[in-house]
Image (cartoon, rainbow, N blue to C red; front, side, top):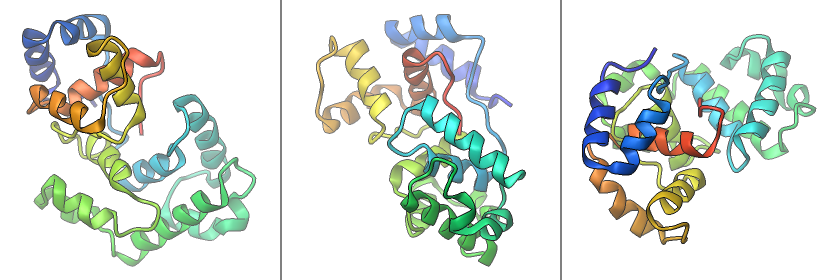
Amino acid sequence: MVPEYWQEASAALAATDPVMAALVEAYGGLGLASRGDAFGTLARSIVGQQISVKAADAVWGRVANRLVEVSPGNVLAAGVAGLQDCGLSRRKIEYLVDLAGHFASGQVDPRRWEQMNDAEIIAELIDVRGIGRWTAEMLLIFNLMRPDVFPLDDIGLQRAVCRHYFAGKKQMPKVVAAFGERWRPWRSVATWYLWRSLDPVPVEY
């Protein structure tokens, strides 16, 4: 389900930024969509670390087929041996198993997140092995639908900003961060449109 703020945010971005206006016009029929499952979102984000959207989709498909249902219990039941021929690195498999353990034990509990701000949720999640700031930000965007997340470490976001606003010239992350301030309080929405401009497959986690 597209978040309630999507149309308002898209209109606000388009009203102040000609590049965003063009992207909103081009991709206005689409929008951010949540899969509604925090564990699945985090697991899919781990799978997608440092590989292309297309490659991540292929690997994720094999993982999902192996598990039948992506859940903490099924990941723990499969273990490292059960996931090793899905196209995942040994390290990513270990990350998935560790994540499943945190959910199963209650150390990570999505029921608490509604009362927490973005920074608090990021701090909780990065204590889990294999989850860095980027993965936590993917959860904020794609599961919790937080409207103002700017995943600065995302290579696709950096590339899109440089392509559309800096004539393709690579910029330092601090420059991209400062540039992104213009899109507050809708940086998640701006990020989605920038991602969409690079890839015909909408980004989802």
